[in-house]
Structures are given as C-alpha cells and as structure tokens.
Length: 635
Ligand code: ZN
Image (cartoon, rainbow, N blue to C red):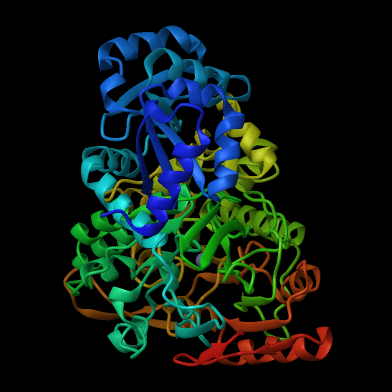
C-alpha cells in the first residue's frame, strides 16, 4: 500500500504534467522519486519541466524508462558504441533491466557524458536506457569489480530494498520535531569505535559505527549498542564519515542483528570501507579470533548503501536532511551535516578532518548553509599538539631516507592502507623523480595497493594537481615503476634485498605484515622505523614510539622471544590527515555560520577536555567534552 505522501506525490505528478499517460509508475527509491515513463526522452530533454516538478513536490526526481520500451540490449549496445566517441575507451556495458539503467564503464568519462550531458541525453533518446557512467581505474581493483557485480546481480532485491527505504523516509510523521539530542555510544574521550546516536521525536540516526582495533575485549573494542534507547528497529539511517575502521568497522554487525535500513556515504567510502572490513575479517581469521560478523553481513551492507556525492542534499527521515562535505582526511571522507526539523536545528559532525591542504586532498570545508551545533574531533587537540609544517616534515623524511639508504639500511614505515600511504607515495615519487631522494625500490605490503587502485578511480575527489596527473595516465604518480606491490609470500625476499623503503600495514603495528618486517629489521642499527601517523594508547606502535628497547614477539614456531630494538625510531608529525591544535581552533573560528554549541570527542581523555576548555575560553563558544554513554540535548 502506498503511504499518504506517495499518494499525494502521485496526484501532484498527474496534475503537473501536461500529459501523464506516458508516466507508468511513480515510486520512492531510497531518498529520490523515480518516474518510470514510456517516453523518457520527453522528460529528459525537457529538463525545466522536471526541475519545476521537483520544486513542487520538494523531492529529487529521476526519470527512467518503463521496461516495455527499452531497446533490446544488443541493439542498445551497438547504438551506444556509435554515439560515444571511440577515444572514451568504453570497457564494459552492463544492462540492469530492473532499473532501466545501463552502466557504461569507460576510461574517459567526459567523452561519455558530452558537453553539459548532451551525449548522455542522446543515449537515452536513442536507446531509452538511462546511462550511468563509471570510471575504469588505471589500476585494476578487484574490490570495486566485486562491489559493482554484487550491485548488478542483486538489482532486483535492491530495487525492493530501496522502495521500502523510500516509503519509510517519506512516512507521515507521528510527532512534531521540537527537540534533538545526541548520545555518545563510542569515541567520546577516546580514539576508536566512533558512534553517535542522533534522536528526534520522529527519527533515529547513527553517525559512524566503528571498532577500536587496539583492544581485544569486546566492551572496549565495540560501541555501546546495548544502551537502552538504541532500538535497532527504530533506526532510520546510518551515516558514515569515512572508511577507517574506527568509524565504519562495526556497521556490518548492525545488519547481522536485523538492521534493514540504508547506509549513506560517498562512493569511494563504500569501496574503501568494504576493502578494510574484509581485511579486518581476514586478520581476525589469521589470528584465530572470533570476528563480530561475516562476509555475508558486509554484502548486506553493500546492497543497502546509498552513495552520495559531496553537496547532494537528501531526506533520510521525515525530519532529517543529510548533506556530505569534504573533510580533507582521506579519499571520500566527509563532514556530515544534518538539517533537522525543517529548519529547527543544523548539526555538523566533522568525523576526522584536516583543515589544511595535503598532497592528496583539498582542506576540509568550513562553510554550511546553516549551522548551530558542531561535533568536532580532537585527535591532536592537546595544548602541545602542534604539528611540524608539511615542508619541514618532507625535508626530514628525505634526509632520514637518504641517511639510512647510504649506510646500507632499510626504512620501514607503518601506514594505514588508506590515506597516509598514498600521501607518502606521491611525495616519494616526486622527490625520487627530482633526484632529491635516493632512488631505491619502494615496497608496499598489505592492502595499500588495493586502496591505491581505488584512489585512481575517483580523481574528482582528489586535489586539482593530483586529479590532473591521474587523468593523464602517462603522468599518474601511482603508476611509477619505483612502487612494488609485495605478494603475501614475498616478505623474506624484501628483507634480504638491497636498501629500500617498505610501507606496510597496520599503521599502529597492531598485527599485519609490518610486525613481520619489524621483527626482522629491529635488531640492525642501520635500519630506521618512521612513524607518520597517530599511534593509539595500547598499541605496539605507541610503546615503541615511547622508547621501548626490548620487544617480546612470537617467532615462526609460536615461541615467545625477545627482540632487541636497535633500529632508529623517528616520528614525523606533519603528514597527519588530522588537524593539529592550531588547525582545529582555526576551523572553529572559520566555521560559517558561527556555531552556538560545540561537542568535542575523538581524542584522548585529556585532549578532548583541553580543546573544549580552549574553545570556551578563547573563542567564547559553549563547548563540552562528553563521555561515552552521555546524551546531550541540542535543542
Ligand atoms: Zn580516520
């Protein structure tokens, strides 16, 4: 049965269109209204008509062809090949008869799209199929192929899921929205397992749902989902800020325990988080640990995910509208902005963010149409958390690499596979090309190469310089031959080879190949271990960073042995994907409009406190650092 809103919208559509006999179906699919039409080209050609209608019904509208008028797939494929210039490099066309979409995968998307979308419109006019374009990444990505294939093979189910979600979003509200509160289920006064529950009289939304990989015990590793007001059946939406596991590692668990609603994130976040969640299961299996969910639950998450580009405004419940903005932290990372109760309140959650340009991304966006409340991270919010400048950090890395190489040693850099790894790859490629850094092989071990491939599929999410280099393959820094992806069995060969740079996961030395390299390289004083990212309390990385001289590890036979730490240890702060204290405060100062209230989280216990006090004192904005399980009322 159609709900009231759908009945009203159908009435509006029938009244508005001059001849609605060629509209065969009007349905909500996720947060958009889809018009199925026997003459889609009339609507697509007449953009004004659809725009006017969208304004009238106050919804985003998509037009698709009714399946009865779709051209035969073979014929449509031939037509598309004739319409699209050959230089576009079409690799694949997948026809999804359920949605009437043809997914055109090509190397040069601009040529498939045409000037102001003219080629796309021509495809619709001649084949009736609705084209959707996807880039073929210059580095092959199995994960992306798997996700794309899953969505295609599940398209029938997905249509059902999206319709159900759509009707739920546009249900008749049962209460007037006159308050909003946020409960912290994780990530308050700590780094790891970020999870916030936003509640209004009508809706419940979760922002991030992560795991703390530094802890083994469930009660410290996973968010407090057993909190009484969290009822999974009442959950309207999950919003993901970015793909790091401390923000998304627990989402499949929600699906395992009955959640059937949507997950919203940017397209690159979906690909990267799937990669990291699968890796998380893999590591758990290798360590003989019970994982909290299985691959099946990840697949369920994928079929329920609604990708949003930066700036897309979407209704996610009767009284909440979501927009994602660039946060400058990693590929696809977002500041999540909620517009609540038709203008009652506007709340932004920064996730992790960098308020400075990096080699990878533009700085986080501080501007919003409206803003009253801000939930901000404080990883480097302590009073002495000033990072070295990027230029100084780059110089320091160059001299450390050159010194180590010249004395015959190896440089080991623990990295998260997403973010710092790519930032360093771009830097190292440039400096070696300019011969400022000695030219040696760079070995990548862990998920780094797979994550890099995903970066090359989304140049539009990267900063301008890098985007232009990726769009011209001959200049793509990631394709440089200095980079070598190490196969799982290739570790010993790398360790026995000539001087080199090794980047390996995990970033905080909690499991992953970096441990194996560390065991073998630590005793030799010629080698250097370089930390470039945050090392959480409880991690081996943090202990080594603090000067641990002897490390107990298990050898190949499972026996405990003590390794002497003779290799040099260096920390370089300026490559971080997080804002340092200065950047955090500057972001608050520049946030526009100026927020009235700020909650500080995602930082060590004292850092959250310290930053919130500074915001109160220096910027005269009401700020507070809640603890886990606390609920704060914003309105
Ligand atoms: Zn992060």
